[in-house]
Image 1: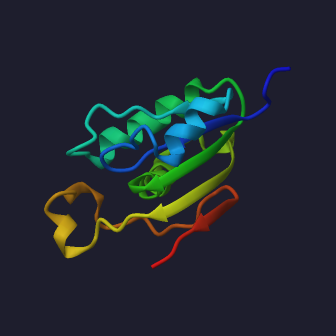
Image 2: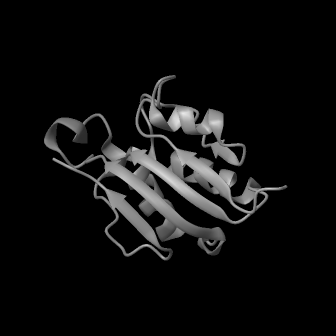
Image 3: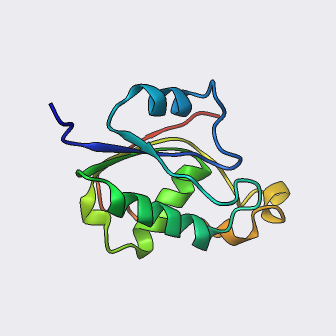
Length: 129
C-alpha cells in the first residue's frame, strides 16, 4: 500500500543528531523525507526557505510538515512566501526557537524578525518554557 501523505521532517539549527526524535521518525516512517540544508551552522533564511520549497515540491503526495526549533520559524517564513502551501495538509511545530533573543541575533541575523502571520494550513504547536 502506498502512503497517501508525505511527512516532511524539518530540523532546526545544527540539524538533528542520530538519537533525536526527528531522526528516529525519518528512519522509521516509510513516507518521511527530511529537509537537507547546505549549511546547518550559519543558516540564512533565504537558503533554508528555498530548500524547504524544493522538498515540498518533490514530495509525491500531499504533505504534513514536522518541524523542530528553527525549523518551526522556517516553516512560518516559507509559508509567507511560497505558492506551494496548498500541498500542506497540516504541520506539527515542536519547540520553536527564538532567533530574536539577544544572544542569537548576531549568530542568526537573517532570522529576525520572526514571521508572525497566521499559517495557511492547520497546525499544532508544542512548546514549553
